[in-house]
Image 1 (cartoon, one colour):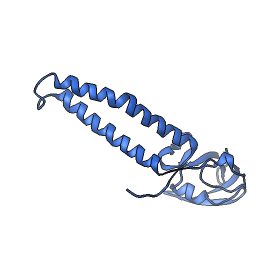
Image 2 (tube, rainbow, N blue to C red):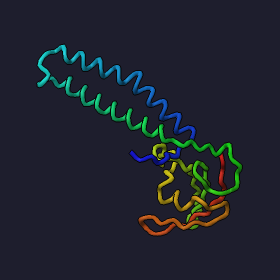
Image 3 (cartoon, rainbow, N blue to C red):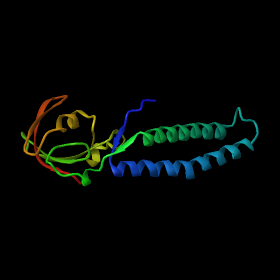
Image 4 (cartoon, rainbow, N blue to C red):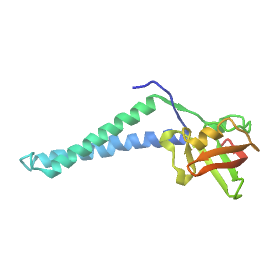
Length: 160
């Protein structure tokens, strides 16, 4: 596995740690019990509950390994503790205005695992975030999208 650092906000790291705790303390014991119960029903070759529980166990164990791997390489970046220079960096919240439509949008630049466009969380590796990082308040940024190019003005950069 690559030893690359995984950038994450404090909220994203806490969410992953919470998921890991739930997988280990609730989901894993539940599926182990389901496998034990299914074994008691006899012939395992034709036991659908047993096979479903084993498949679920495989998924849970894989997810536990994935989360532990990410957490071992996590680099928590808390912009709230940094001086606001007006520059867009990982973790900042960026307010934009579409130069053509005057539509306002707000995005927080987050790690891949935290990205959720519906809640305004944009992956740092997305084309929009890559175009914004390094820019400052009042800059106009041209962002290529499938239907062409859209220009946004950065109206505010928050370090929250």
